[in-house]
Image (cartoon, rainbow, N blue to C red; front, side, top):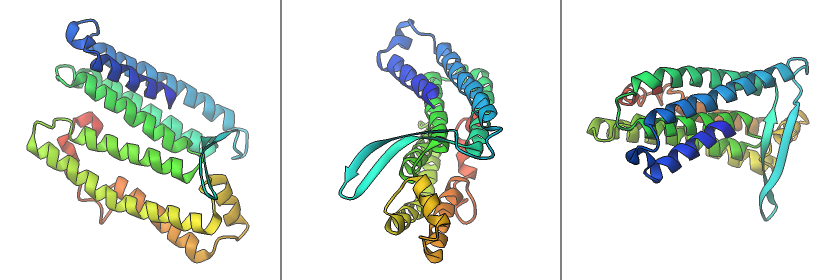
Length: 249
């Protein structure tokens, strides 16, 4: 997560300082930097997968710190790793690495080359943050960052009216699904008083959450996933998403 995030920060800073226009930074460097960052993340993901291989599904890494406290609500931010998370880390970084390598040539002559790789770095970092989230609120934050990146990439060629419309359509339709996600967070918090994934899991195992609340919570999460993955009836934005660069799709 941190390597693609660093790549995003560096490319953004380079663009802000005008180093590309001055010739001090070749646009190709942005592509190389992104590939190196995601390659490093992929290798670390393989190490993480190997580390959890013999743990029988137990978490081997968990680091959580208090982020903010509002009344009785304490929100933690941290990283959690288990077998499922490790597999998804490999999937995300592996696919993203192939996309970045392909994008090097596909976007070679595009004026927005730097901007493209900055967005793709942030996109990958957001997906990794989602996979490693230790609380459902933290998961939701990265979930929304993924949505923001989708909006920016679909509307990448914003000079075209069709691209602007497609980006706005994708953003609005997926927000409908995300509303279900937000409702799910409210439901689970009223039942458990916590947004920490481990505490929610323990409460569910102990039977402290009613079956109706659990069902509504699951349906809310499903609504969010349906929006992001363009499942019926929130599928209408997907064909228009081709307005963005092909590697994004």
